[in-house]
Image (cartoon, rainbow, N blue to C red):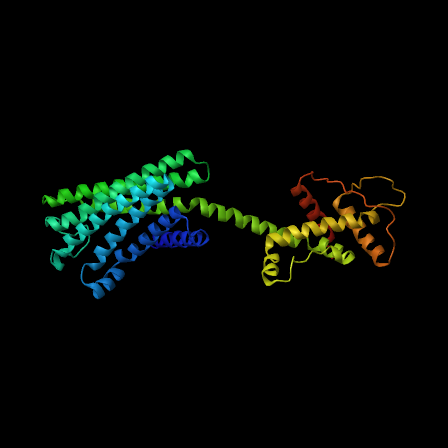
Length: 370
């Protein structure tokens, strides 16, 4: 139960965050409302939450409110797909589905309020299904849930076939979860019919359906948050790598900025917003790379021996680090540049990442001396 609650909370927070960045995104708003309704219905299914609502609003109010929220959950889920498809056609279909869910919600509400409170007490497994209103309450809600979940599962499978990883992986997880929920609702509808006729249903079957519902809900929540969570995980790994590389470049950057302080880049403007953005890890990382490369270009004339007339300086990291220390000392003594700038060989490759690896290797070679 706690795992389910954590899953709901994480999904709601993530979608609310996305909605704040795209407030006019209708499909996103629909899926966010879907998760909010599902999250609100969950505490009403717990004994503590149900008793609290029943104390304030009357006996049975929690159960009725929970089922109405579940109907709204699947309705907004359908709206997500309808708004994601055709604009006008999807909006007309969404209005039609709104009428259907309203009729179902009003019908089960009438069925609930027309029976005594003592008859309406209990859960699905203990309710007296021989009472027509009770059977209609559970059966009507269950059939609508089965219909809406089945349609959503079919649309999710269609989108999963059209998508690529990692989005398709999350969509397939969500589709399996939706189909499993639809199957569970169908089994519950059959159970309602059996119990309405006065027969009994084995308790293991009832427990199995409850477990299937819980697992399918978890799988659905995991599916709709999979791509976003994976993207966040990837961005976090990139952030950590840039933070680590930025720190590893400190010895080289400090040595070069001591010799050429004018190469240290400043924020574009003194505004607080620009200063705050300039302190971001990614900006500092890329800025430090540029500053180190500019410093190496400026100091390169001091790295070449006087009798060396080559046009390309090809040194390993340790030797280059040693020459850098000597060059900074010469610059500190006021010695003029002996020649023009000399390009440095890229021993680890010619792409940007190889450039960064070479800078880090030189910086690591400088660290013991530092």
